[in-house]
Length: 203
Image 1 (cartoon, rainbow, N blue to C red):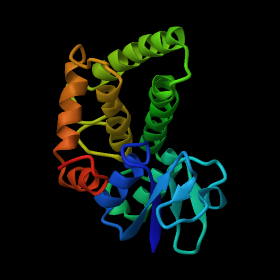
Image 2 (image 1 turned 90 degrees about the vertical axis):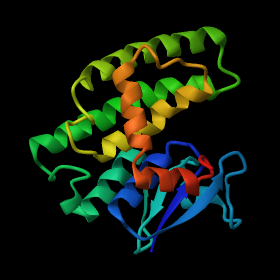
Image 3 (image 1 turned 90 degrees about the horizontal axis):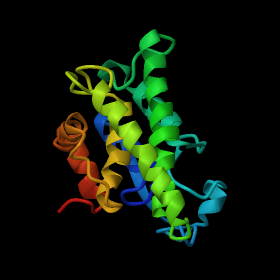
Image 4 (image 1 turned 45 degrees about the horizontal axis):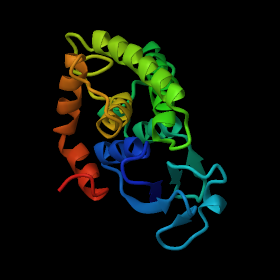
């Protein structure tokens, strides 16, 4: 059985959402990222030497890391659900474009905001960068329910996960109404609700 190694509310929420949207059977194993231990007492560095989440252990024992790779693997297990377009299609590359943009331009700009040792000047720059990225995404969402149109994909789960962090670092998303509407739309999805509840993020 698949096993997802996660930390509540971290970027591992993205593949967690993907797994539930795909209807795959999987186990959840929480990771203490400071101690590098799993809840069952395993040394997490032996599972994923990178030391961070997510990691997905496949049925054959192979461990896949990096969220954008994991969510595409998950989507490809159930192609009829269209959580990712067909491999090799122009639409698939558009999805990969979004996954890369979210990972490098949004996700990574949040990192200093969660780092207590990051200088305040650095955090200010990160927030300025995020404001530009949010404005870009807000414009792209105008007239669309999801990033690639009317259909939910794994890129939407990733965007929802990282933009949700704004709530924890005092970033106001009200200047971005399309992004806010997107967040509410994704949050209301039953499988997203399941994932949030399973991670203790929703009562």
